[in-house]
Amino acid sequence: MADSSHGRLATVETETNYGAASLGNQLESLAGMIREYVPRTRSLVDVAMIAAAQLDEAGYYLREARLQGLRNTLVRMVRQYPLQSLLISASIGYLLSSSIRSNANGNQHR
Image (tube, rainbow, N blue to C red; front, top):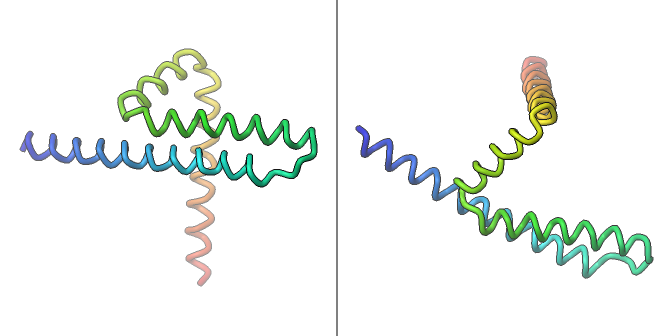
């Protein structure tokens, strides 16, 4: 029984690491597209380059970090910013419940 649950946990961790790496690659690709296709207006270029740099950093982090690293970062951020973390969590919960509720109500009217 323990071997089975350990195997499942390893599978979930592997799939999560693969998903994070894939998302990281996609963010880095998006950063490259922003750099390539942004119009050459000076103020827009500055904003686009900052956004592309942030996407590159996020992409690199997600590609290179593993599940344990992501978990450690999340724990550190929650400890460093407890009130903001609570507000973000409550907001996400509210949005998810609103979305689920609206989907449930929409299915009833069909």
